[in-house]
Length: 344
Picture 1: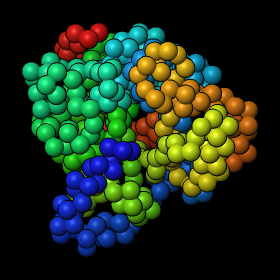
Picture 2: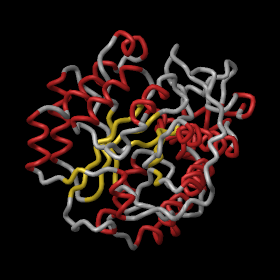
Picture 3: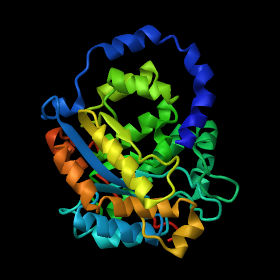
Picture 4: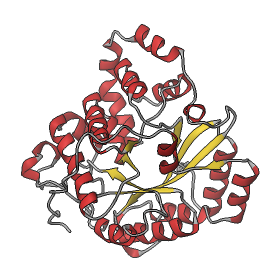
């Protein structure tokens, strides 16, 4: 979210000059919740509990394995450039009919000393890399420096590598929101999703979401609204993260999460968490290690499970969304020629 806020500062002047105010209003006029379009009643609360950052490290992989097996999460996605992606792919490739496994398209490498580069050789996508050959450490440098054609090639390479390692992705989503940093990035993301027939992480541009997005400073231009509306796939109505500010204990995490669940609005919502086992490895990587461990624990809490049931919340996967609105047939046959990254 920090990265998104920085983006807002960069683009605020650009957005102010876009002569799209009237166009945006027209684009927002007629809408229907994605959940309704997908066949749920208008008052249905549909929730996806999604695990991000799988493959980032061993601690994330072990947590995802537990959470998928016991149903704590309904979906997860793999960071293909990361050193532990291969481990998770090997574990899940023969279990894909049981679990909802997507790709967390990764165009940044945000940790101070734990870094990774692109799947492609840095020489093939130089605008995506810093001087050490790692992906940029935040979204802002990507937005300012990256070439859209290199973004497209790297996204495609990540999909091809997953296929090579036996994965049939149920969806594509985005690490740190980078693919939405510029409209040409989003078009590249959509293009690759369409090529492979994989449902991408997209939001139905309802007036509610557009208002919320603009409040947060997201670059919701008329062009972006049109891209979202026109893409032929199942979409979310909203997404959210567990509250971070003021969280200092597991009980804090549990209480704030339960409040978020109580406040869910009708529609399809993706609740994004970062489940991990608390290990010295994870603590060396990130200062959010305890928070990530609490996010794994909380969805196994009987009180949280009971609340989801009492609130009559429908738990869902990307696979189910795609069945309700299938993607068009792939426009290309994947060749999976991508070489294994040297980091692996």
